Length: 437
Image 1 (cartoon, helix red, strand yellow):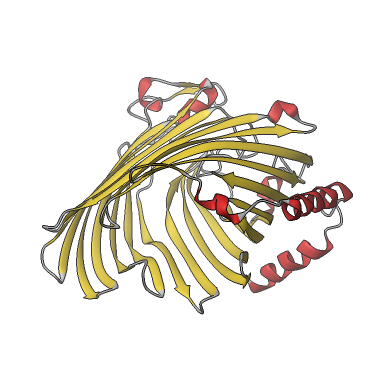
Image 2 (tube, one colour; image 1 turned 90 degrees about the vertical axis):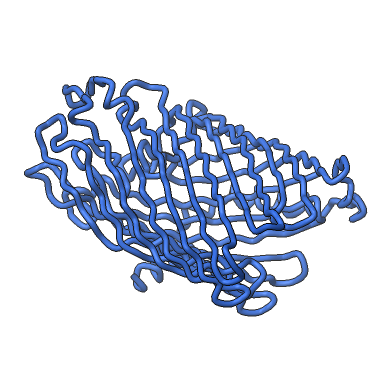
């Protein structure tokens, strides 16, 4: 892994194709535009306010150079993408920090200079609320809806690099009670929905219901130790509705669908956001159990178990420097018809540095390993390593105006030569400017 990270860093400096004259001109325009703004900082307080409610309209423009928009080493195509993002957010704050209400809407309007058939819209309404009573009850609820045509794939990279019409909805809620000064209990529920417009994509449509319970021991005022159980039920709605697969020429039914359940057991630490350590660290054991015995080809579904993790922990090294560790390991449904699922392992490290007042730089390095399981007989074992590096600079010109740049390098490598055709290498550089009224 270290040698690969070193290679990525070298690529970021010597990739001559990426550092194009056009991108340098765009970058200079961004800097000059921000420097020429001559508007008083007093406008920072011009938010629309109605009592304790704040309404924040926003407008963002980003320009991105991407050297492989299809994520395909056999068909590398570069382009410049312009993204305009209008939005609005409504915020209400109660007497306590735990009491709040937020709702908003944003839409990405993306235009490609050369490949205009890839133009897309991405609509993103959302809402969240929190409440804590004096008697110790508390609740948090969130909903995030996304309707998009973008080519960046779903969570498992299904249709990555291909414009795909789809929508997702994520609703979750936590109900908690502080039993005493030292102990709390939480109940959790989440509903996930995934839908596609085109019939040949609908075999990936699914609904998920997740239920959980956590017992917490408040070890210190800022640190809790907890144990958690979570059950996840996933149903492939179109597969259960006698869906014909035109690519493989067979029929999905309720007796062959990929429906499955996950039983996850965690222990971990939770850190309050007011301390030097923030976030949550939890590891555990997970079991995957399919509802059916065989898929439409007659291949048997294999149940499985492994260690799992869901951790995102921040540490304030100094007043200007912070570190964030990302550790994830879980089961995920496969985007490939010949494979049922894969084990996904992610390790990432982010460093954020405040350079001077209003200038902040950050870097993020990540390694991801996808180990595919339950493959059809006769196929070589499939696994991939994905390496990525992000470098960014954010500038708070005024409290209502920000600008910045971000460079991203991503590389996917196959462990077996049979799957080298799925490898890819991408570089992108983006500049942005955003106004929040």
